[in-house]
Length: 433
Image (tube, rainbow, N blue to C red; front, side):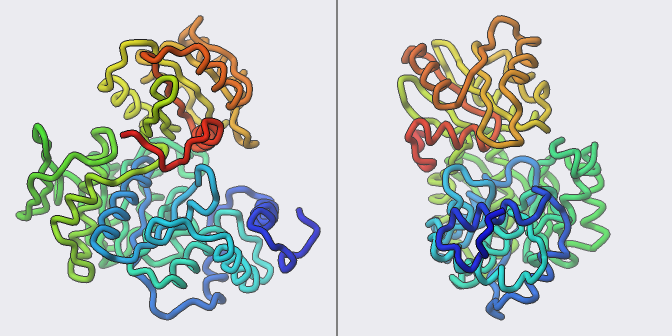
């Protein structure tokens, strides 16, 4: 731990290094610490409308759709997401702009004064800072992405006006339980009695719906209370007897983005009395939405696709997109993942569409060693796996070998994609989609 007291810190890097050591546990689920500090923080009495988004996959995309819609409609929108790709400031945005170091540091000072002896985790500090910054900016709408689970995640200490759970899959099972039923129950913990609870999973576990109804929340389930229909060059969204027709193809790639966009439109419908949105704004927002690291396509010596797919469900979606995207040459993969991930489950859907694998270790203690990744993949596709070194040097090696007709897929974790973006000198907003 840094020996100097927080009062002497002058840079964001100093604050973040200290926070990383404040609580001996990187992850410690529970709301008591955050609730205690929230009660002591000097926050405005007037709060923004809060939309909380949980789920295994699709959280970031759903938040991106909502941010695009409400900003296009002229509202002041604050967004909290995690983790970041290249800069911590990405986690807290006001109208699409990253919050400054100075504003985040001021939030940290307020939190440190309010926390007394509570040993907040790194994520708890960041969540409280985001809420402070969004309240200080007097945003109309606050979009809060849950970090892990839902019921005991720090974000759940902030009362939502609408709660969303996107697709549920097996991930973080050490924390959330071994089955989709267990995970669904944890994620349903963000629902509130008599408030909209939106389920974006087309086949949710019964536990999620049962939890919502027991509160009772005002439940909307994809495929039952709302949904969408694809057409050749447009799509239709429906909610009971209401319809929005001739909607443009979403600006994010993949079939699952219709699900995420449909969920976002249901949120907008639930809040239409307080925050109306004109249909022309919806059309423009759906077309122009962008999100770094979600099938982000950039052109280099060959096309490069960056995707933060880090569990089997997300890998299946990545595989489907790759199969629908023509490539006349070879497909290379640069793959790095965390130790707790289901590596076999991640690579299984991708072995048919990736010809050459390069394993790497992101620069984070929780990362799986590239040698172990190599052994697991080599056992499934012998002769097609290469043991990488650092991400920058492995990238250099691959890009020497590729032809313009080839493509490179960089995936496996946020940290893998983040290091690759930096090594390639690509801003996380650059996208050729």
